[in-house]
Image 1: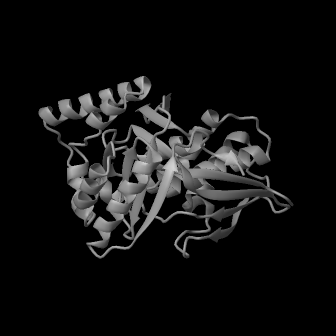
Image 2: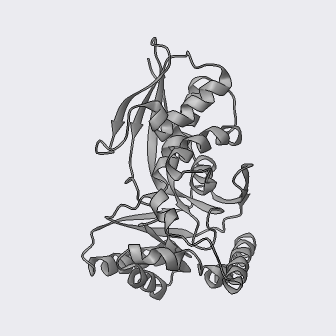
Image 3: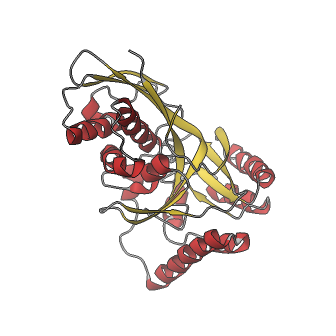
Length: 309
């Protein structure tokens, strides 16, 4: 039977100064999930492309499968025959919200297939359950952003208290993926539990002023605010060439640059597409100097999130 195909975009989690509470959706790349009805009862994953055999077909071990299963349980439709086909269009363990995109796409595809009429915000709890399989906890900076689009602020992960922030026109992102793989759980494990009062104050001020900059379209304030003094210094050593790439982006005119999610992807937030292109070239050259191959993604801010493709 014909199915519903959904695209859910990659995302930049944390945005440097917003650990576990900020996310930004990209126009590309993103994952695709096709959900189709089947005469065989229950949910099955019948195809996974682009993952190099790294992802399980067992729905309870796959982020897309878990998200869809939790939705079906809520609907009382676990006997409904549904097949999922997953197309991965971004690297696993890249810091680009790959697992979150699959979860968001799957839950939206199943909802549309069954014509539930549920909004994306109503689907968020189920997508979050899928992402939890990989992150080890409910972390919404990627999955809420991929599902809803735009720039998202998470006030509280546990209660799914998320808010859409204003995104000034013209902002562009240069995202560079060095060909390394960093596991989210492992990268969370390197973080120290204690933060000095001075760094807490500085980070809080940067986060608050960044949000003010967004709502006031104050580009210069965004640049002054995009400085992560807590998480970035603890993770940077796992990404050879990070500081050189960051310096290159800033010299090219980027507002700021930091690690995307848990890494190794590195983003530069830029005031326009031309500066983003120049920043990207400098960043790629910096990583090449460390012997690393990279993939470049240039993107505006995706305001739609998951969509029927």
